[in-house]
Image (cartoon, rainbow, N blue to C red):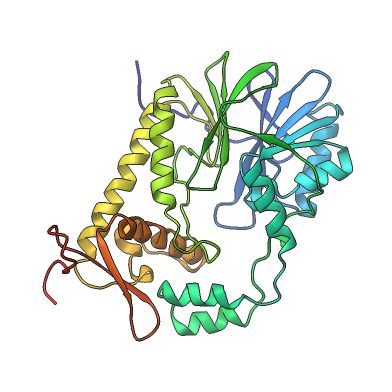
Length: 355
């Protein structure tokens, strides 16, 4: 038996169309205006209507695609429910629109709903000082800080429709019926807090959102809202917790890239990849480094301008993980940036290597 990773479909559905990946489960791909240029969402056939898992961004193009899907592949049947895997804009963007325009009920973890609604209401004309301080402490250069500080920041409201009051909470271990199947809710963390995944109780299907993806690793980022967070630890624990439930033949439906099988293999691979990245970082920190200087050992490639922001918050996340574990020391340098350095194994706090 092949226990490695396989992708049963080599091509995604065309825009405005869907692919039935299992009876009553339709895979839909929606566009994103960034390097990762798509998000996968799913429509589950409830007989008299549909349950939608994740929605895409709030844009005219995405709304038009949904309108065409509803009158086309979805057969004009109503959207009864919108279920969110997590609160990021490409997944929550049109939840409020489906609620207000189609009368859909919203189901989400409490954290996803509250964070999504809070961030959508928190509109900033300029980056707040806390964000500027975070950039500086992460080692962002002063020229880039000045450029970003004077420009309009990204606001959730730019890409997320207003989210009305009222939702139904999803909790760890509860069971939910959708698409003619019974599903168990299991929460992950690290990429997003209280990220819902859905494990079919009567067939080997997993709707994983961004918690587990076939060919890229979920972004694990730290932001000014919680600058001391350790999402790497949370994510590794989640992967370990999922492993006992994983089966080789699980069909995994993720928020990006292609559906795949080989779940146990992929979870083990992701865990190993992050431990390897941490090992490379330990070697690199034989001398003081800022987060912005740690891209090469972490990602093993040149980071472009479009990827810089996500790379920076992921570098901070991995450094926070080592700092919380007591493996690195840190202090503010003359420029106001944290510099990190591995401590020796004696626990004295002395840095490895020469001064």
